[in-house]
Amino acid sequence: MAMALSVGLLNATSARAIARDPKSFLAAMHELQDLVETIVSDRQEEASAITAA
Image (cartoon, rainbow, N blue to C red; front, top):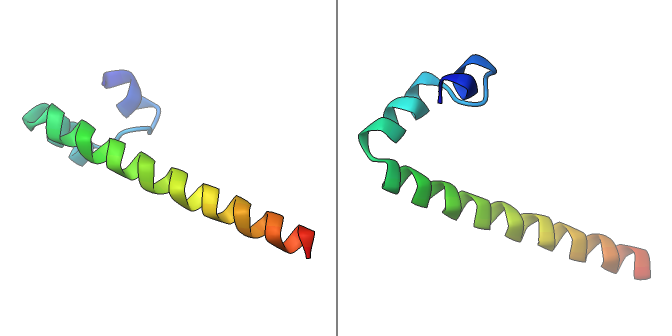
């Protein structure tokens, strides 16, 4: 965690949240990852539709 803080991948607020409740924090990160993957997939489908048109 110290390395992530030092290179700017993690801020102090996130570090405290992880320390308080790591399981909840990780669950939220997985939900966020799922959301981002859905958005990326939707954008790729839109781009394919535009290319096909």
